[in-house]
Image 1 (cartoon, one colour):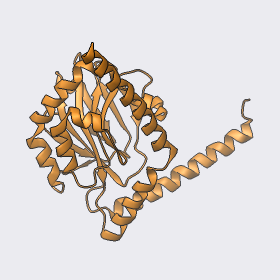
Image 2: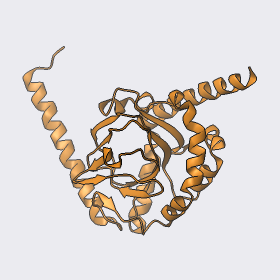
Image 3: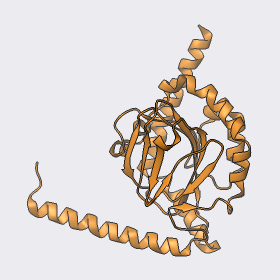
Image 4: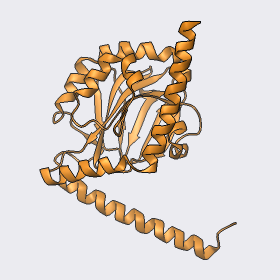
Length: 255
């Protein structure tokens, strides 16, 4: 049934009110942050980034063992239907290590050195290989919560480099192999891979640094988020993929 003009106006007003409340909370969190609240941030306050960068070739070698079967990797929207607003095509694949308290022991076994490096990152919330297919475009979108900070470690960046890019707010990122970029994903960001090659980064989410009391509250909120259907439903879908994928792998080896 189509909504009446009056109900449409009411729904639009509620959405605007929600956006204003969200913006007010994010602005407040930005003022409390112990690091920049701008689109891009310095990596100097995160010692684990230098450790990742110094071992990027190790991670890249393990990635190369995963990619031959990348057609079998899940598209992100298969795990999280909300991502359908970003793309409906199977152009954004993921190989998940950690996600909101869930650990993929099978994927970690496949890439043990990468898993060790991830385990050394304090309070890591999310870690996965983010695989962008040739010609892919991810529509402008934004993260849900300013209490997290996102890093991308460039692992495979096809040429020409200027054709593989991400706009974050008013900034533009061009990835480089072996280098991390750190950004606030609550700014609207849009991604293009206008090349014939595959772009892969190791995506990491960590809690934003805050003063001690707010840091504790932030970590508690992140733990509560693990109980929401958005997370629990995605974890169930991932576990189903993981079971089927590795069962098929075992069957191939046994044949």
